[in-house]
Length: 203
Image (cartoon, rainbow, N blue to C red):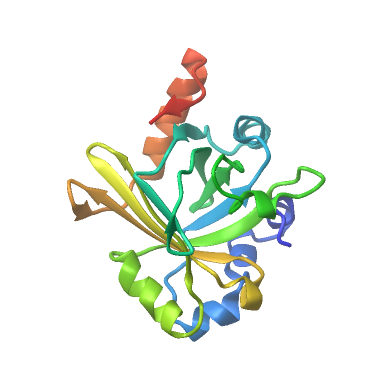
């Protein structure tokens, strides 16, 4: 189990993040780590704690993906997530949600934020997913989130047996074109959410 607090207390946060699953990542020449997916029991509560430590403000949103295929079977999933950046790494907070145990199974009994997955920005999630699938690491969850004019495609790979956590491929699209959102955008929206008292946007 990798705890966010341990990474935060490391002398070099980026180096500590880069050390997670490093041999596996080198083996498949994966891109640099873009995201730490953190399982928490309550996203708003966890975001508040981290904001108190100088991270964020967090952009927080709730809703359901356009689709969520788990082990190639369609599921109806609804959840809440939050995004902010710390030293160039995206911190994504994730609640258990409803309709799947995918995030729930990673929760810590003491409510500590746990690294559930590493996320990598790619242009095509299915191409990268096929590389790991052919090597014996199948797609666990394939889904898409949309908030016009953007959409986010994602594929969670079952790499737990070798790395202790999940690897995720992520592709952001703006009107169908691949792009990378800027950290300042999430922080700006999070700041507005805090000022207005509306901490969760429902997509």
